[in-house]
Image (cartoon, rainbow, N blue to C red):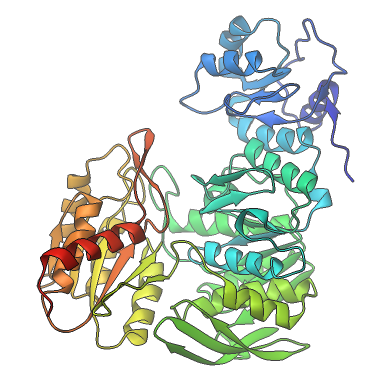
Length: 527
Protein backbone atom coordinates (compact mmCIF):
# COMPACT_ATOMS: atom_id res chain seq x y z
CA UNK A 1 0.00 0.00 0.00
CA UNK A 2 1.19 3.51 -0.78
CA UNK A 3 2.65 5.75 1.91
CA UNK A 4 -0.33 7.56 3.44
CA UNK A 5 1.75 10.19 5.25
CA UNK A 6 3.94 12.97 3.94
CA UNK A 7 5.68 15.95 5.49
CA UNK A 8 5.79 19.66 4.81
CA UNK A 9 9.36 19.22 3.63
CA UNK A 10 8.29 16.62 1.09
CA UNK A 11 5.55 18.92 -0.18
CA UNK A 12 8.05 21.75 -0.55
CA UNK A 13 10.42 19.44 -2.41
CA UNK A 14 7.60 18.36 -4.74
CA UNK A 15 6.86 21.97 -5.61
CA UNK A 16 10.55 22.71 -6.15
CA UNK A 17 11.01 19.67 -8.36
CA UNK A 18 8.16 20.90 -10.56
CA UNK A 19 9.33 24.54 -10.55
CA UNK A 20 6.18 25.58 -8.69
CA UNK A 21 7.55 27.23 -5.55
CA UNK A 22 7.96 31.02 -5.53
CA UNK A 23 10.03 31.18 -2.35
CA UNK A 24 10.97 29.18 0.72
CA UNK A 25 8.10 28.10 2.93
CA UNK A 26 7.84 29.99 6.21
CA UNK A 27 7.95 27.54 9.12
CA UNK A 28 7.07 29.59 12.18
CA UNK A 29 6.19 27.55 15.22
CA UNK A 30 6.04 24.21 13.41
CA UNK A 31 8.46 21.52 12.38
CA UNK A 32 8.98 20.91 8.69
CA UNK A 33 8.87 17.23 9.58
CA UNK A 34 5.26 17.45 10.76
CA UNK A 35 3.09 14.92 8.96
CA UNK A 36 0.43 16.08 6.52
CA UNK A 37 -2.39 13.59 6.06
CA UNK A 38 -4.72 15.40 3.67
CA UNK A 39 -5.53 18.54 1.71
CA UNK A 40 -8.69 20.66 1.52
CA UNK A 41 -9.94 23.71 -0.37
CA UNK A 42 -13.22 24.00 1.56
CA UNK A 43 -12.88 25.29 5.12
CA UNK A 44 -16.01 23.34 6.10
CA UNK A 45 -14.13 20.04 5.69
CA UNK A 46 -10.69 21.26 6.85
CA UNK A 47 -9.13 18.97 9.45
CA UNK A 48 -6.14 18.47 11.72
CA UNK A 49 -2.77 18.08 10.01
CA UNK A 50 -4.22 18.94 6.63
CA UNK A 51 -2.90 21.42 4.08
CA UNK A 52 -5.46 24.10 3.23
CA UNK A 53 -5.43 25.40 -0.33
CA UNK A 54 -6.59 28.98 -0.87
CA UNK A 55 -8.05 29.24 -4.36
CA UNK A 56 -10.85 30.73 -6.41
CA UNK A 57 -12.05 34.20 -7.38
CA UNK A 58 -14.51 34.19 -4.49
CA UNK A 59 -11.92 33.18 -1.88
CA UNK A 60 -12.05 35.12 1.41
CA UNK A 61 -9.33 35.30 4.04
CA UNK A 62 -11.93 34.22 6.59
CA UNK A 63 -11.87 30.78 4.98
CA UNK A 64 -8.20 30.41 5.88
CA UNK A 65 -8.91 31.54 9.44
CA UNK A 66 -11.63 28.89 9.73
CA UNK A 67 -9.33 26.20 8.33
CA UNK A 68 -6.54 27.06 10.78
CA UNK A 69 -9.04 27.02 13.64
CA UNK A 70 -10.07 23.53 12.46
CA UNK A 71 -6.48 22.35 12.74
CA UNK A 72 -4.92 22.94 9.31
CA UNK A 73 -1.15 22.58 9.65
CA UNK A 74 -0.20 24.76 6.66
CA UNK A 75 -1.66 26.44 3.63
CA UNK A 76 -0.87 26.99 -0.03
CA UNK A 77 -1.78 30.09 -2.02
CA UNK A 78 -0.79 32.01 -5.14
CA UNK A 79 1.72 34.85 -5.05
CA UNK A 80 -0.93 37.58 -5.42
CA UNK A 81 -2.56 36.67 -2.12
CA UNK A 82 0.56 35.73 -0.15
CA UNK A 83 1.04 39.00 1.75
CA UNK A 84 -2.63 39.33 2.68
CA UNK A 85 -2.90 35.76 3.93
CA UNK A 86 0.40 35.93 5.83
CA UNK A 87 -1.10 38.71 7.91
CA UNK A 88 -4.21 36.63 8.56
CA UNK A 89 -2.32 33.48 9.61
CA UNK A 90 1.18 34.68 10.59
CA UNK A 91 2.10 31.56 12.55
CA UNK A 92 1.03 29.06 9.91
CA UNK A 93 3.48 27.70 7.31
CA UNK A 94 2.71 28.94 3.79
CA UNK A 95 3.50 27.39 0.43
CA UNK A 96 3.45 30.13 -2.22
CA UNK A 97 3.17 29.26 -5.91
CA UNK A 98 2.97 31.34 -9.11
CA UNK A 99 -0.45 32.79 -9.90
CA UNK A 100 -0.83 30.85 -13.14
CA UNK A 101 0.35 27.56 -11.63
CA UNK A 102 -1.98 27.26 -8.64
CA UNK A 103 -4.34 24.73 -10.26
CA UNK A 104 -1.53 22.44 -11.37
CA UNK A 105 0.17 22.73 -7.98
CA UNK A 106 -3.13 22.00 -6.22
CA UNK A 107 -3.54 18.75 -8.16
CA UNK A 108 -0.01 17.49 -7.49
CA UNK A 109 0.00 18.54 -3.83
CA UNK A 110 -3.44 17.02 -3.16
CA UNK A 111 -2.38 13.66 -4.57
CA UNK A 112 0.76 13.69 -2.43
CA UNK A 113 -0.99 14.90 0.73
CA UNK A 114 -3.57 12.12 0.49
CA UNK A 115 -0.88 9.48 -0.13
CA UNK A 116 -1.59 8.70 -3.81
CA UNK A 117 -4.48 6.28 -3.21
CA UNK A 118 -4.72 5.72 -6.97
CA UNK A 119 -1.71 3.43 -6.62
CA UNK A 120 -3.84 1.04 -4.55
CA UNK A 121 -7.12 1.23 -6.46
CA UNK A 122 -8.62 0.12 -9.75
CA UNK A 123 -9.94 3.36 -11.23
CA UNK A 124 -12.15 3.44 -14.31
CA UNK A 125 -12.54 6.85 -15.99
CA UNK A 126 -15.28 7.74 -18.49
CA UNK A 127 -15.58 10.93 -20.52
CA UNK A 128 -18.07 11.96 -23.20
CA UNK A 129 -20.68 14.54 -24.03
CA UNK A 130 -23.51 12.15 -23.24
CA UNK A 131 -23.86 8.90 -21.28
CA UNK A 132 -21.12 9.12 -18.63
CA UNK A 133 -23.48 8.75 -15.69
CA UNK A 134 -25.48 5.90 -17.19
CA UNK A 135 -22.38 3.93 -18.18
CA UNK A 136 -20.81 4.42 -14.75
CA UNK A 137 -23.97 3.32 -12.92
CA UNK A 138 -24.25 0.28 -15.15
CA UNK A 139 -20.69 -0.73 -14.34
CA UNK A 140 -21.21 -0.11 -10.66
CA UNK A 141 -24.36 -2.24 -10.73
CA UNK A 142 -22.34 -5.06 -12.28
CA UNK A 143 -19.74 -4.88 -9.50
CA UNK A 144 -22.48 -4.92 -6.86
CA UNK A 145 -23.90 -8.24 -8.04
CA UNK A 146 -20.90 -9.95 -6.46
CA UNK A 147 -21.10 -11.66 -3.05
CA UNK A 148 -20.31 -8.41 -1.18
CA UNK A 149 -22.85 -6.20 -2.97
CA UNK A 150 -25.08 -4.47 -0.46
CA UNK A 151 -27.10 -1.83 -2.31
CA UNK A 152 -26.83 1.94 -2.82
CA UNK A 153 -24.86 3.07 0.21
CA UNK A 154 -23.31 -0.31 0.89
CA UNK A 155 -21.95 -0.73 -2.59
CA UNK A 156 -18.82 -2.71 -3.33
CA UNK A 157 -17.65 0.01 -5.72
CA UNK A 158 -17.15 3.73 -5.31
CA UNK A 159 -18.66 6.18 -7.77
CA UNK A 160 -17.63 9.77 -8.48
CA UNK A 161 -19.84 11.60 -10.94
CA UNK A 162 -22.55 14.08 -11.69
CA UNK A 163 -25.35 12.32 -9.77
CA UNK A 164 -23.73 11.18 -6.54
CA UNK A 165 -20.33 10.70 -5.03
CA UNK A 166 -20.01 7.61 -2.84
CA UNK A 167 -16.65 6.45 -1.51
CA UNK A 168 -17.58 4.04 1.28
CA UNK A 169 -17.45 6.82 3.88
CA UNK A 170 -19.21 9.81 2.33
CA UNK A 171 -22.35 9.81 0.17
CA UNK A 172 -22.98 13.24 -1.35
CA UNK A 173 -25.15 14.73 -4.07
CA UNK A 174 -22.71 16.04 -6.65
CA UNK A 175 -22.44 19.64 -7.86
CA UNK A 176 -19.39 19.07 -10.09
CA UNK A 177 -19.07 16.04 -12.33
CA UNK A 178 -15.43 15.74 -11.27
CA UNK A 179 -14.54 17.33 -7.91
CA UNK A 180 -11.72 19.78 -7.31
CA UNK A 181 -8.40 17.98 -6.58
CA UNK A 182 -8.46 18.09 -2.75
CA UNK A 183 -11.98 16.64 -2.74
CA UNK A 184 -11.23 14.13 -5.48
CA UNK A 185 -8.19 12.74 -3.68
CA UNK A 186 -10.07 12.69 -0.38
CA UNK A 187 -12.73 10.49 -1.96
CA UNK A 188 -10.08 8.22 -3.43
CA UNK A 189 -8.38 7.97 -0.04
CA UNK A 190 -11.73 7.07 1.52
CA UNK A 191 -12.25 4.38 -1.13
CA UNK A 192 -8.87 2.91 -0.23
CA UNK A 193 -9.60 3.05 3.51
CA UNK A 194 -13.10 1.57 3.18
CA UNK A 195 -12.01 -0.89 0.48
CA UNK A 196 -14.78 0.24 -1.84
CA UNK A 197 -12.88 -0.71 -4.91
CA UNK A 198 -13.06 -0.39 -7.95
CA UNK A 199 -13.73 3.32 -8.34
CA UNK A 200 -15.90 4.34 -11.29
CA UNK A 201 -15.60 8.02 -12.10
CA UNK A 202 -16.91 10.44 -14.68
CA UNK A 203 -14.26 12.81 -15.98
CA UNK A 204 -15.53 16.09 -17.39
CA UNK A 205 -13.91 18.30 -19.98
CA UNK A 206 -13.59 20.98 -17.29
CA UNK A 207 -11.66 18.59 -15.06
CA UNK A 208 -9.29 17.72 -17.89
CA UNK A 209 -8.83 21.31 -19.06
CA UNK A 210 -8.42 22.89 -15.63
CA UNK A 211 -6.04 20.26 -14.28
CA UNK A 212 -8.30 18.70 -11.63
CA UNK A 213 -7.06 15.22 -12.52
CA UNK A 214 -3.39 16.03 -13.04
CA UNK A 215 -1.31 13.21 -11.57
CA UNK A 216 -4.19 10.71 -11.60
CA UNK A 217 -3.52 7.30 -13.14
CA UNK A 218 -6.49 5.37 -14.51
CA UNK A 219 -6.55 1.61 -14.87
CA UNK A 220 -8.55 2.24 -18.06
CA UNK A 221 -10.22 5.26 -19.63
CA UNK A 222 -13.17 5.45 -22.01
CA UNK A 223 -14.07 8.02 -24.65
CA UNK A 224 -17.82 7.65 -25.22
CA UNK A 225 -18.72 10.39 -27.70
CA UNK A 226 -18.32 14.05 -28.57
CA UNK A 227 -20.86 16.74 -29.48
CA UNK A 228 -21.07 20.51 -29.35
CA UNK A 229 -21.65 21.55 -25.74
CA UNK A 230 -20.24 23.71 -22.96
CA UNK A 231 -19.18 26.39 -25.44
CA UNK A 232 -19.13 29.72 -23.60
CA UNK A 233 -16.66 32.30 -22.29
CA UNK A 234 -16.77 30.61 -18.87
CA UNK A 235 -16.25 27.05 -20.14
CA UNK A 236 -14.74 26.34 -23.58
CA UNK A 237 -14.38 29.20 -26.08
CA UNK A 238 -14.60 26.83 -29.06
CA UNK A 239 -15.56 23.27 -29.91
CA UNK A 240 -11.90 22.60 -30.69
CA UNK A 241 -10.96 23.53 -27.14
CA UNK A 242 -13.75 21.33 -25.74
CA UNK A 243 -12.73 18.36 -27.90
CA UNK A 244 -9.02 18.74 -27.11
CA UNK A 245 -9.84 18.80 -23.40
CA UNK A 246 -11.82 15.55 -23.67
CA UNK A 247 -8.96 13.84 -25.51
CA UNK A 248 -6.63 14.45 -22.58
CA UNK A 249 -8.15 11.44 -20.85
CA UNK A 250 -5.71 9.26 -22.80
CA UNK A 251 -2.75 10.89 -21.06
CA UNK A 252 -3.99 9.35 -17.80
CA UNK A 253 -4.07 5.69 -18.84
CA UNK A 254 -2.35 2.99 -20.85
CA UNK A 255 -5.64 1.26 -21.73
CA UNK A 256 -7.97 3.21 -24.01
CA UNK A 257 -11.59 2.13 -24.48
CA UNK A 258 -13.31 3.84 -27.43
CA UNK A 259 -16.86 3.89 -28.71
CA UNK A 260 -16.34 3.35 -32.44
CA UNK A 261 -19.67 5.04 -33.07
CA UNK A 262 -18.42 8.44 -31.92
CA UNK A 263 -18.06 11.31 -34.33
CA UNK A 264 -14.51 12.52 -35.07
CA UNK A 265 -13.36 8.92 -34.59
CA UNK A 266 -10.08 9.35 -36.48
CA UNK A 267 -9.03 12.15 -34.13
CA UNK A 268 -10.00 10.10 -31.09
CA UNK A 269 -8.00 7.08 -32.25
CA UNK A 270 -5.03 9.29 -33.06
CA UNK A 271 -5.06 10.77 -29.56
CA UNK A 272 -5.37 7.27 -28.07
CA UNK A 273 -2.33 6.02 -29.96
CA UNK A 274 -0.16 7.03 -27.00
CA UNK A 275 -1.79 4.20 -25.02
CA UNK A 276 -0.31 0.72 -25.16
CA UNK A 277 -3.73 -0.94 -25.53
CA UNK A 278 -6.78 0.20 -27.51
CA UNK A 279 -10.14 -1.56 -27.27
CA UNK A 280 -13.02 -0.46 -29.50
CA UNK A 281 -16.68 -1.30 -29.01
CA UNK A 282 -19.60 -0.82 -31.37
CA UNK A 283 -23.38 -0.87 -31.05
CA UNK A 284 -23.62 -1.20 -34.85
CA UNK A 285 -22.10 -4.63 -35.34
CA UNK A 286 -18.52 -5.89 -35.66
CA UNK A 287 -17.38 -3.03 -37.92
CA UNK A 288 -17.87 0.69 -37.44
CA UNK A 289 -16.45 3.54 -39.51
CA UNK A 290 -13.85 1.22 -41.01
CA UNK A 291 -12.63 -0.24 -37.72
CA UNK A 292 -13.01 -3.71 -36.21
CA UNK A 293 -14.69 -3.78 -32.82
CA UNK A 294 -13.34 -5.98 -30.05
CA UNK A 295 -16.77 -5.96 -28.37
CA UNK A 296 -19.95 -5.33 -30.32
CA UNK A 297 -23.74 -5.68 -30.31
CA UNK A 298 -26.38 -6.80 -32.77
CA UNK A 299 -30.02 -7.99 -32.79
CA UNK A 300 -31.08 -4.93 -30.80
CA UNK A 301 -34.81 -4.68 -30.07
CA UNK A 302 -36.93 -2.46 -27.86
CA UNK A 303 -40.35 -2.44 -26.29
CA UNK A 304 -41.99 0.27 -24.23
CA UNK A 305 -39.51 0.66 -21.39
CA UNK A 306 -36.95 -2.09 -22.20
CA UNK A 307 -34.06 -2.70 -24.60
CA UNK A 308 -32.56 -6.08 -25.54
CA UNK A 309 -29.42 -6.90 -27.51
CA UNK A 310 -26.78 -9.59 -28.08
CA UNK A 311 -23.22 -8.71 -27.02
CA UNK A 312 -20.15 -10.36 -28.52
CA UNK A 313 -16.75 -10.46 -26.79
CA UNK A 314 -13.60 -12.41 -27.72
CA UNK A 315 -14.54 -15.05 -25.12
CA UNK A 316 -18.33 -15.24 -25.03
CA UNK A 317 -21.61 -14.13 -26.60
CA UNK A 318 -24.87 -13.51 -24.77
CA UNK A 319 -28.20 -11.68 -24.77
CA UNK A 320 -28.68 -8.77 -22.37
CA UNK A 321 -31.74 -6.86 -21.18
CA UNK A 322 -31.90 -3.25 -20.01
CA UNK A 323 -34.93 -2.25 -17.96
CA UNK A 324 -34.89 1.30 -19.25
CA UNK A 325 -35.90 2.91 -22.54
CA UNK A 326 -33.42 4.39 -24.99
CA UNK A 327 -31.75 2.47 -27.80
CA UNK A 328 -28.66 4.63 -27.32
CA UNK A 329 -28.20 2.94 -23.94
CA UNK A 330 -26.77 -0.05 -25.81
CA UNK A 331 -23.61 2.04 -26.28
CA UNK A 332 -23.51 2.81 -22.56
CA UNK A 333 -24.05 -0.86 -21.73
CA UNK A 334 -21.24 -1.90 -24.10
CA UNK A 335 -18.94 0.56 -22.34
CA UNK A 336 -19.75 -1.14 -19.02
CA UNK A 337 -19.45 -4.62 -20.56
CA UNK A 338 -16.03 -3.75 -22.00
CA UNK A 339 -14.65 -2.67 -18.62
CA UNK A 340 -16.20 -5.71 -16.93
CA UNK A 341 -14.67 -7.99 -19.58
CA UNK A 342 -11.28 -6.36 -19.04
CA UNK A 343 -11.56 -7.11 -15.33
CA UNK A 344 -12.55 -10.73 -15.92
CA UNK A 345 -16.10 -10.53 -14.60
CA UNK A 346 -18.36 -13.47 -15.39
CA UNK A 347 -21.00 -12.79 -18.10
CA UNK A 348 -23.84 -13.90 -15.81
CA UNK A 349 -22.80 -11.30 -13.25
CA UNK A 350 -22.73 -8.69 -16.03
CA UNK A 351 -26.18 -9.77 -17.21
CA UNK A 352 -27.66 -9.57 -13.71
CA UNK A 353 -26.03 -6.21 -13.02
CA UNK A 354 -27.39 -4.66 -16.20
CA UNK A 355 -30.94 -5.92 -15.75
CA UNK A 356 -30.98 -4.59 -12.18
CA UNK A 357 -29.48 -1.22 -13.03
CA UNK A 358 -31.48 1.91 -12.38
CA UNK A 359 -29.90 5.29 -13.03
CA UNK A 360 -31.60 8.08 -11.04
CA UNK A 361 -32.99 10.66 -13.43
CA UNK A 362 -31.61 8.96 -16.56
CA UNK A 363 -34.21 7.52 -18.95
CA UNK A 364 -36.38 6.92 -15.92
CA UNK A 365 -39.86 5.83 -16.98
CA UNK A 366 -42.49 7.10 -14.52
CA UNK A 367 -45.68 5.06 -14.70
CA UNK A 368 -48.79 6.82 -13.51
CA UNK A 369 -52.10 5.30 -12.38
CA UNK A 370 -53.53 6.37 -15.74
CA UNK A 371 -51.76 4.72 -18.73
CA UNK A 372 -53.03 7.59 -20.89
CA UNK A 373 -50.08 9.65 -19.61
CA UNK A 374 -46.51 8.44 -19.04
CA UNK A 375 -43.42 10.45 -18.23
CA UNK A 376 -39.72 10.02 -18.82
CA UNK A 377 -37.24 11.86 -16.62
CA UNK A 378 -33.86 12.33 -18.24
CA UNK A 379 -30.81 14.50 -17.87
CA UNK A 380 -30.72 15.27 -21.61
CA UNK A 381 -29.49 18.86 -21.78
CA UNK A 382 -27.56 19.40 -25.03
CA UNK A 383 -28.05 18.94 -28.75
CA UNK A 384 -26.40 15.51 -28.95
CA UNK A 385 -28.42 14.12 -26.06
CA UNK A 386 -31.62 15.58 -27.53
CA UNK A 387 -30.95 13.91 -30.89
CA UNK A 388 -30.43 10.54 -29.22
CA UNK A 389 -33.25 10.94 -26.72
CA UNK A 390 -36.03 12.02 -29.08
CA UNK A 391 -35.11 9.75 -31.99
CA UNK A 392 -35.14 6.79 -29.63
CA UNK A 393 -38.39 7.46 -27.77
CA UNK A 394 -40.22 8.32 -30.98
CA UNK A 395 -39.73 4.74 -32.09
CA UNK A 396 -40.11 3.13 -28.68
CA UNK A 397 -43.38 4.87 -27.78
CA UNK A 398 -45.25 4.96 -31.12
CA UNK A 399 -48.59 6.70 -31.28
CA UNK A 400 -48.03 8.93 -28.25
CA UNK A 401 -47.97 12.71 -28.42
CA UNK A 402 -44.71 14.08 -27.05
CA UNK A 403 -44.81 16.99 -24.63
CA UNK A 404 -41.42 18.29 -23.52
CA UNK A 405 -40.61 20.39 -20.45
CA UNK A 406 -37.20 21.96 -20.89
CA UNK A 407 -34.98 24.93 -20.11
CA UNK A 408 -31.39 26.08 -20.33
CA UNK A 409 -28.89 27.01 -17.61
CA UNK A 410 -27.83 30.52 -16.78
CA UNK A 411 -24.29 31.90 -17.08
CA UNK A 412 -23.04 29.21 -19.47
CA UNK A 413 -23.63 27.11 -22.60
CA UNK A 414 -25.61 29.85 -24.33
CA UNK A 415 -25.77 27.83 -27.54
CA UNK A 416 -28.35 25.55 -25.93
CA UNK A 417 -30.95 28.31 -25.92
CA UNK A 418 -31.05 28.13 -29.71
CA UNK A 419 -30.10 24.52 -30.41
CA UNK A 420 -32.53 22.87 -27.97
CA UNK A 421 -35.75 24.54 -29.21
CA UNK A 422 -34.73 23.77 -32.80
CA UNK A 423 -33.95 20.12 -32.07
CA UNK A 424 -36.94 19.47 -29.78
CA UNK A 425 -39.30 21.00 -32.35
CA UNK A 426 -38.37 18.25 -34.80
CA UNK A 427 -39.94 15.66 -32.49
CA UNK A 428 -42.29 17.17 -29.90
CA UNK A 429 -45.92 18.18 -30.26
CA UNK A 430 -45.66 20.80 -27.53
CA UNK A 431 -42.81 22.53 -25.69
CA UNK A 432 -42.92 24.20 -22.29
CA UNK A 433 -39.92 26.37 -21.37
CA UNK A 434 -39.11 26.64 -17.68
CA UNK A 435 -36.35 27.11 -15.12
CA UNK A 436 -33.16 25.04 -15.18
CA UNK A 437 -30.43 26.31 -12.83
CA UNK A 438 -30.69 29.98 -13.88
CA UNK A 439 -27.68 31.08 -11.86
CA UNK A 440 -27.32 34.86 -12.05
CA UNK A 441 -29.73 35.29 -14.97
CA UNK A 442 -33.49 35.76 -14.97
CA UNK A 443 -35.52 32.68 -15.84
CA UNK A 444 -37.85 34.90 -17.86
CA UNK A 445 -34.99 36.12 -20.05
CA UNK A 446 -33.61 32.63 -20.71
CA UNK A 447 -37.03 31.27 -21.62
CA UNK A 448 -37.74 34.28 -23.86
CA UNK A 449 -34.54 33.52 -25.80
CA UNK A 450 -35.66 29.92 -26.25
CA UNK A 451 -39.13 30.96 -27.37
CA UNK A 452 -37.62 33.37 -29.90
CA UNK A 453 -35.50 30.50 -31.29
CA UNK A 454 -38.51 28.18 -31.66
CA UNK A 455 -39.42 27.40 -35.28
CA UNK A 456 -42.58 29.02 -36.60
CA UNK A 457 -45.60 26.78 -36.18
CA UNK A 458 -44.27 24.85 -33.20
CA UNK A 459 -46.56 24.90 -30.17
CA UNK A 460 -44.56 26.39 -27.31
CA UNK A 461 -45.14 28.42 -24.17
CA UNK A 462 -43.31 29.71 -21.11
CA UNK A 463 -44.09 28.64 -17.54
CA UNK A 464 -41.17 29.85 -15.43
CA UNK A 465 -42.00 27.92 -12.26
CA UNK A 466 -40.92 24.31 -12.85
CA UNK A 467 -43.64 22.60 -10.74
CA UNK A 468 -46.27 24.66 -12.57
CA UNK A 469 -44.66 23.81 -15.91
CA UNK A 470 -44.93 20.08 -15.18
CA UNK A 471 -48.55 20.52 -14.09
CA UNK A 472 -49.22 22.40 -17.32
CA UNK A 473 -47.72 19.50 -19.30
CA UNK A 474 -50.21 17.15 -17.66
CA UNK A 475 -53.05 19.49 -18.62
CA UNK A 476 -51.90 19.43 -22.25
CA UNK A 477 -51.63 15.64 -22.13
CA UNK A 478 -55.35 15.40 -21.36
CA UNK A 479 -56.46 17.76 -24.12
CA UNK A 480 -56.83 14.87 -26.58
CA UNK A 481 -57.81 11.22 -26.45
CA UNK A 482 -54.47 10.24 -28.00
CA UNK A 483 -52.09 9.03 -25.25
CA UNK A 484 -49.16 11.23 -24.29
CA UNK A 485 -45.55 10.94 -23.18
CA UNK A 486 -44.25 13.83 -21.07
CA UNK A 487 -40.49 14.37 -21.30
CA UNK A 488 -39.02 16.08 -18.23
CA UNK A 489 -35.55 17.09 -19.31
CA UNK A 490 -32.22 18.23 -17.83
CA UNK A 491 -32.82 18.14 -14.07
CA UNK A 492 -33.00 14.37 -13.75
CA UNK A 493 -33.06 13.32 -10.10
CA UNK A 494 -31.62 16.60 -8.80
CA UNK A 495 -33.05 18.10 -5.64
CA UNK A 496 -31.90 21.71 -5.99
CA UNK A 497 -31.92 24.65 -8.37
CA UNK A 498 -28.79 26.79 -8.82
CA UNK A 499 -30.01 30.34 -8.24
CA UNK A 500 -27.44 33.10 -7.90
CA UNK A 501 -24.63 31.77 -5.74
CA UNK A 502 -26.74 29.25 -3.82
CA UNK A 503 -28.49 25.93 -4.41
CA UNK A 504 -32.19 26.14 -3.52
CA UNK A 505 -33.92 22.86 -2.55
CA UNK A 506 -36.57 21.57 -4.93
CA UNK A 507 -38.54 18.40 -5.57
CA UNK A 508 -37.46 15.94 -8.25
CA UNK A 509 -39.23 16.01 -11.61
CA UNK A 510 -40.57 12.51 -11.05
CA UNK A 511 -42.18 13.49 -7.77
CA UNK A 512 -43.66 16.66 -9.31
CA UNK A 513 -45.14 14.65 -12.18
CA UNK A 514 -46.86 12.18 -9.85
CA UNK A 515 -48.25 15.05 -7.77
CA UNK A 516 -49.56 16.74 -10.90
CA UNK A 517 -51.22 13.49 -12.01
CA UNK A 518 -52.79 13.03 -8.61
CA UNK A 519 -54.10 16.59 -8.63
CA UNK A 520 -55.48 16.17 -12.13
CA UNK A 521 -57.37 13.02 -11.17
CA UNK A 522 -59.27 15.04 -8.56
CA UNK A 523 -60.21 17.98 -10.76
CA UNK A 524 -60.43 16.80 -14.39
CA UNK A 525 -63.01 14.55 -16.06
CA UNK A 526 -61.90 11.31 -17.65
CA UNK A 527 -61.44 11.29 -21.39
